[in-house]
Length: 107
Image (cartoon, rainbow, N blue to C red):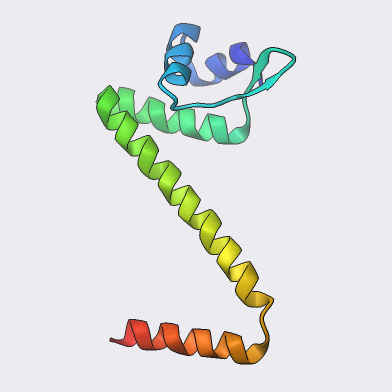
């Protein structure tokens, strides 16, 4: 999706899109010098739009929310990697890890 399609979808002006990118809230890909927006960019932009327009969150608040969203996705990625590594271990190791987790959360 290019700038025009992206702005039309969100019903925003290019200047607002440029501002969101300058703030680091969006990081579109670049193809032959043109910005290309992915589904993740659209999801982030929809969140930014809702926060600013519908909820009245200011720029500092958007910075905090987007940082927290990025941290959450980073943790999800880490958890997926950890699960993948654990799944490669033999059954005895997996059982010990599950037992340790059960013990931790039963406390």
